[in-house]
Length: 493
Image 1 (cartoon, helix red, strand yellow):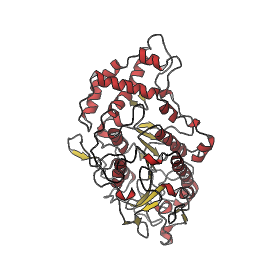
Image 2 (spheres, helix red, strand yellow; image 1 turned 180 degrees about the vertical axis):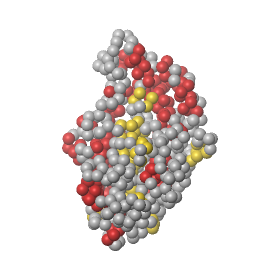
Image 3 (cartoon, helix red, strand yellow; image 1 turned 180 degrees about the horizontal axis):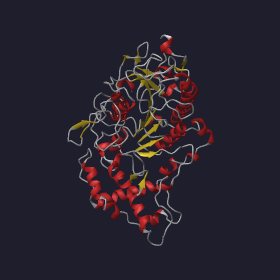
Image 4 (spheres, one colour; image 1 turned 45 degrees about the vertical axis):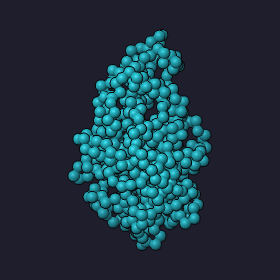
């Protein structure tokens, strides 16, 4: 999958020209590593802020359930609502007294002492009730102003506002030899558009996510982190001078940096590029970075606990990346947001029809097993104390079963419902074992402690010690806040 050196070549006191160029470019996961490191090495200029929970987390793990599960059937059961709303599932008691989930999440119910469920998140869709608009809002903290009048997503570009992972990579870069922004599992897809709200946009490629979309049930190839046997690292350090190659890209770096939020002078000096050179080698030689991708190092028992599915093993990979010092990891559910629901482990959450058999027999058994394993495993290893974990879709599903809010709901289905839904949040200073907020009797509207998706994003930044009010300039030199509006959800801490 990844390649540092294409193949063994002439290795006396020098490397072959092709190998030298590949080492100089050090292209990992489709990213140009010197640019990536140039961005990550900038000073953390976060505005000083405070309040409950500020800076309690060192890392964030976002589990994104693209396609959006029904909040009523998973997180917010409504046993007193009419049958046409409450559906087929019964509530089950959690290990925390007074908490209930849908019967399709028994293993997560047993782990409730480790997390909180927020049942009052919602947004006025302003006419855009489709997946793409909701995804963009959730992933960037801004209204989807770059969408077409019909609400269809447009391909990502450098004019986009940056994703949450990119902002975190910019303001809280990982330590030397570690990754700042990694996306695993699958790409975000809406219609034919791939990568909605995922790139660093106007921040530049330096802060784009490192993407690992291979099927994690199969061995991940680690060529990008290894050298041929006859090229030890000390020889690479002493015989191969990457600095000239890196410096030859100074003009590219200057262009990227001139569009960044920091307004720091481009790192064209020899000392700056010396640092990038050292950082590049640090990633290559980092044992932690290499080991994170070796899922085969885990015991068969633990791998089976997560489930030998694409989603389950991606969750395990995410835990290993967090353990290895990665700042932000996003695990994305494998199916496209608007795929037709189908049987199997990797099918869609977009249950416009056959909601109940799809959730009961296919989606929830996979999600329940893997998410409960992730929470349990991270708690046992002490990782939850400093890691904020969030599991969420881009919206909820309509309370009334089989009743279209558009023209695309079939028998037993639930439509898009951005007005009110739920998410799971754990670790990073969040009070566990509780419910925050409440929806009305039908799960249609927030009734208590209403929050907006922007409040969630502000909360993520707040937990990491990043002031959500920090401003930067867009490509037209207009001031922008990291989050368009909203504030951290203080009641979670």
